[in-house]
Length: 231
Image 1: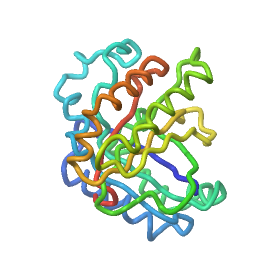
Image 2: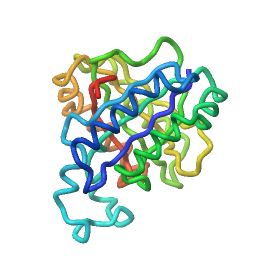
Image 3: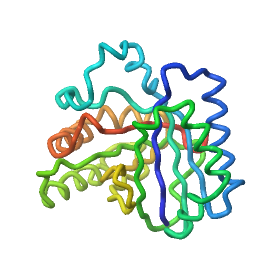
Image 4: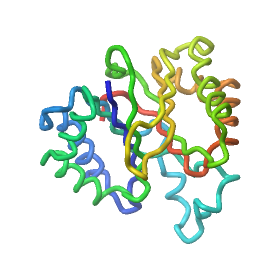
């Protein structure tokens, strides 16, 4: 299965009705785009980018100068689309429904910060409605070695059986071709919100994140925790 993942940041001016309209657009993709085999979407369960929006734009540390600060906040909205193969994704990219939804999202989201990655997985759909998903996207440092990258992947995936409530952890490399794509995705499926809190607070997860921070452009990390297929 080929999955396209995109994480979005609201504009500072986006209203609650506009956010709801954006979510409705994502839900409609499963009906309006023939090549889409499955849709997962949702908003962040931990206040999204609200901590960032509380700081005036002219007082925010620029991302290119904020490596030691790490990610400024979670992202606000996630979209995950499943396709049979790259041909299905290309058909979606040419689809009028996709264009309409993307145009609206551009009006309510900060398009220049949208985080995207295309990745492959085997087995059944990784979407279980009303389960919880935590997604993190990373950009490798230019000097990160293949060995270090593998250590990061294994640090996350080794936690699968260590934390109660964690259903699965998958680390996948980008197979997309856009220069703006992220490099690595860590996809975690969890039982519920309490399991998500336990995962994020677990020492093993924090150690894996610290290892990722040492080998990635950590200030550009994109992450979100949301209720699957929930809106």
